Amino acid sequence: MQIVWLKRDLRVHDHRPLTEACRAGGPVLIVYVIEPELWQNGDLSERHARFIEECLAEMQTEVRRLGGELYTACTGMVSLLEQLAADGTPLTLYAHEEHGKPDTFARDMEVRRWMKERGFAVHEYPSFGVTRGLRDRKQFDEKWQEKMQAPLLPVPGAIPAPPASLPAVVTRQTTFPKQLALPGETIRYGQQGGESLGLETLTDFLENRFYQYRSHLSNPISSSTSCSRLSPYLAWGALSFRRAYQESVRRLSHLPNPQDRRQLEAFISRLHWHCHFIQRLEDEPELSERNMNRAFDTIRTDWDEDAYTRWKEGRTGIPFIDAAMRSLHKTGWINFRSRAMLVSFICNTLLLDWQKPAQFLARQFLDYEPGIHYSQMQMQSGTTGFNTIRIYNPIKQGREQDPDGRFIRRHVPELKEFSSDFIHEPWKSPAFFHSQYCGAVVDVMDANRRAREVLWSVRDSEAGVKEAEQGLKKHASNSRRKEASAKKPKPAFEQLSLFDFDD
Ligand SMILES: Cc1cc2nc3c(=O)[nH]c(=O)nc-3n(C[C@H](O)[C@H](O)[C@H](O)COP(=O)(O)OP(=O)(O)OC[C@H]3O[C@@H](n4cnc5c(N)ncnc54)[C@H](O)[C@@H]3O)c2cc1C
Image (cartoon, rainbow, N blue to C red):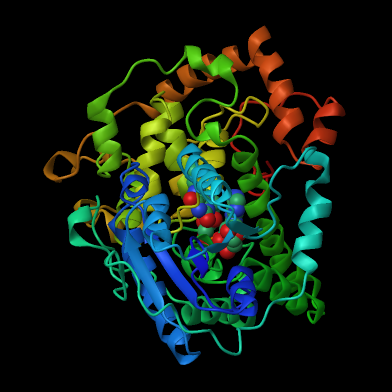
């Protein structure tokens, strides 16, 4: 029996495991395994499950049209394999590589061991531009290009029927069992899953929406349409990453206007970053559980549950922070700048450790992708030791990105009546005490000053510098390494310039 093990690849086009399993002949079992242990690991939530269900429902229709069947099974993967092989049926497994935290790595190793011990073959294929077992980070770009240039695979012409009898745990349902009791709520105004919506989003972006991509990247309102909004489709594999890249490059080749080209080039460079950051976690999955630069282990040892709760609930009393958090609750998406600012606030301004906030944000981001997420958490809280330390002033950010306070008024109704003069610092208004809005959890200027001292003293310490050199060697891009070796003067304690997002 050929088994196509679906993971973060919920589509039928450009799907190598599906293509190869169909070519091999014999019955094909296409299965999405809902592994309760992984779903309880703290990063996954109800909104992810809904999005996956929507992807699976559409995929099932397509698979049936081609003669096959799609199943789900709620159990551990090894347990499923045991049940499938119980009657002596030989198994062959086809899957994409998954780039996750130590738990998915451990699970994959267990599956491989189990299959090998029984003489069953496992065929694993790269998911996008990340290379498993990359020996030298300098080879990353070349290997990325190779993968991106490979031709797209068509949807199989026909999918062989599934085996006649299957264990009871395998079902045709594409919904998650209620008893999993996943954390979080469904999204009220979010994106929906499915391959056709992923493709539609790509086409719409490349035809109509990319013209202001770079210019509006950090605006909290206009970025929601000027950004591609491809992230959940890429994260759950409802859209082939290679296809997104190839179609973007094709579109670029037909753009004569340099201004338009710059916008689209900025987008394409982010597709490269996608894999660059995921490669970090692939090379060192423990980065989801500890500081990259261990010198930072000596700080952020105190915990403030009250401040953490207020941050999670969008009740810090800092309007731009609260608007970003509440918007994220409702939609499952905020732009890069807002994500970075939320992390800077909790981990730098309030000096709390990044791990609990990382898990909380993972559950909120519909596009949760472990490799990007944990690499960015470490970058934004300064714990890589080789990236610029970014300590945002959310009041200044609010004035710059939301000058008239439209975004704030939309998400923080307590401030609806405040004029633009006071919307970013409502406590300065004589009317503040009549409002229902909470007082600020911290004096941002004082707290940021303290954070700078603490973070830079660790970064500049002997241990901090030594660790940073190792991290740079192992994880930084070629351009970042060259930049460091050119011994540029250390950046001043300033806000990040708009496009200085390089690793
Ligand atoms: C703390 C933090 C956590 C993040 N967690 C995630 C996450 O879990 N999943 C995720 O997809 N992105 C994450 N990002 C990166 C980025 O914010 C989102 O990719 C982007 O906002 C998604 O919207 P979009 O698809 O419209 O992006 P666009 O700007 O249109 O970019 C297109 C694609 O490029 C990739 N990309 C864009 N920006 C980055 C970046 N800075 N680093 C790596 N890849 C990038 C994504 O795949 C994105 O879908 C995080 C950023 C921060 C600061």
